[in-house]
Image (cartoon, rainbow, N blue to C red; front, side, top):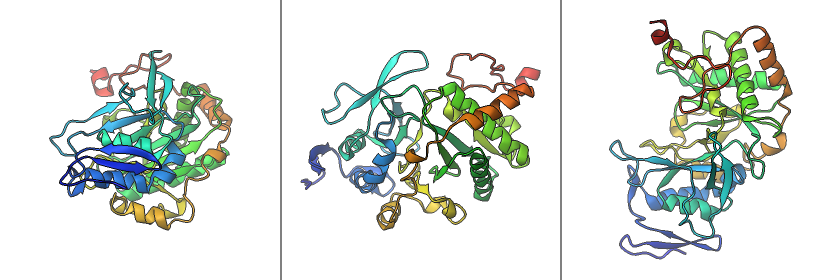
Length: 339
């Protein structure tokens, strides 16, 4: 049980581990204290751990709370000062340098991260001990400023259809903003480059089927009022908000796993720190409980990539912080390149 008076540090028992929480009454979101953020993560810790256990995880930290003026940063390397109940996972960065990221395997480890000012947990697409081969292909559906959520729903359903035609199950969650994330579990037999190419192939198929609503253009000036299929979320070292993570917005939204049948009914504005614990408690089965067991062969998607290459379709740009990759086009936005 916690013990505190007048904002003094709490000593909280989390499944038999004592976690220290300083400044429990600090406002993290408008009207939401640090203690309430911890209570949220403890409430969803069970299903969240099913998704993040074994996955190298970066921390998005807001030490002064989520405000326009606040500074924040992403912490990928686990500090040496972490307590003994917090464990790390070794990974190789694209540069080849090793790194140690949080390996969230207990609710106590999640609570420690909250104590450190973490708002969002960004989990990798790999599971230890094999951190060189992704076990998830991830699609981030990123709407333009003029797109409605109905536009995003439309593309998400199409994404599920294409994946299904290629023999792959898909799982969907809210992003905590205006988009949707579609995760496809795969057998860990392919490289990061392969998985990224498979995501490009999937996105190109979506674009062919619905060019008025879907775009694969990396450059914003070319996207227009279409939903962008962000294929680069599959580049090595990229991480996405974990299932059940809070997002850094004043409304304290959540990236929430949902059933495909709920996509057309859900309003992401209603998915927040205040509403999700009750929803999770009322669920008989977590929508993503079967994601790891559904791992599929990536070969059909890779065959689609090979067909596109044979048809003359090129490699697409990598994010700017990556080294120049083989076959990659110039990383210059088209308007400047033409000039």
